[in-house]
Length: 422
Ligand code: AMP
Image (cartoon, rainbow, N blue to C red; front, top):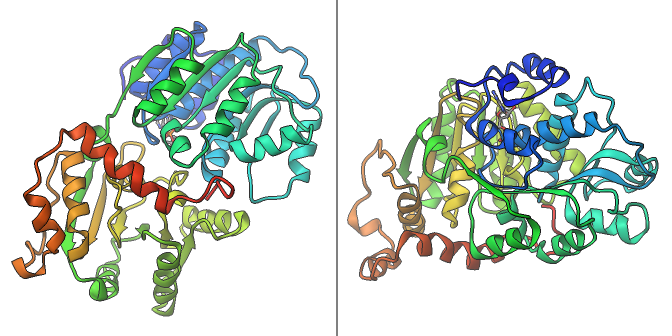
């Protein structure tokens, strides 16, 4: 948190009320850095991940601009367009913006796949001030003539790196190409690989660059991180042993696959633990019910895959358990960022079998820290041959090592562009 106030940053009264009601006392660093530039009308390139308060950083100035120029909304149009890669994130952003703007007379809509088209068509028919959307569904609606982009004054591309990893680049380019040239644009990304840099330079005009919480820094400091070395067949027993401790009261368990998530959830359910699974094969309704149950405290354990995890923004998650280690180190950071939110502390426990030792090495290298080993290192024989091979390879610079596994391996685990919003 920072020492300035939202008022000092230039935020106006109706929004200050909403922030007070949300108990936001001081702006987060990304808010303090970005808000004055955005209020001044500058384009912004924000390097920040979810959990830093970036939604309010871009949302508050846009809402304030919209409220200050209460122009007539044009049917089938929007004045502000926010693109996000997953359905959960779209719903999360849309809900936050409605909350912040509840004292303003603005019309909001959300457009996302996996739910019926008709309510979205209806919401767009009269035109809206704020539209939050996933790119695939938005383009479908545009092709069918239900939405056009010529009234967009404010454009936000959120989680740009994830957007490109999920294969949305062509959709994003099409949408950007249809926007008016005179507009204010923002791009947020947790990392800045080359393709995101290229997109930013196409999309932004003389942007101000603001950066907070680089991977491996602040967010991770609030998380107590441990690793248990356990063979795959013994992971369920270890999970049950850990869950016997009632202090694990709100737990997210991550698996690498949807099938794995269902299997773990099924077994916990048999053990009478209140559990729900959330992943790309679940309907939007089922995902939302799972999230609502977890948020209200009715469900103790949420089993999730990486893609479904992005929009999980639930306070007071006591523990994140990596039942399987992610093969992409950035996903580890995103997973453990589900705990220790909004200033709280959290615990992240990772299970590592012998085949996952290389993933652990990558994670420790990217986060530049060694995870605690409560039960010590495994015996030498348990190590994977692949790890022994890798030890002899020359070390690459960090920047290359982080992106290399990310690009290739993500393709295997992310859905094809035709079924994008997992
Ligand atoms: P975001 O990075 O936008 O997903 O925000 C992460 C979390 O921080 C959300 O739960 C927000 O409600 C919360 N948050 C955002 N800004 C503030 C603030 N200034 N003070 C306290 N909490 C905040």
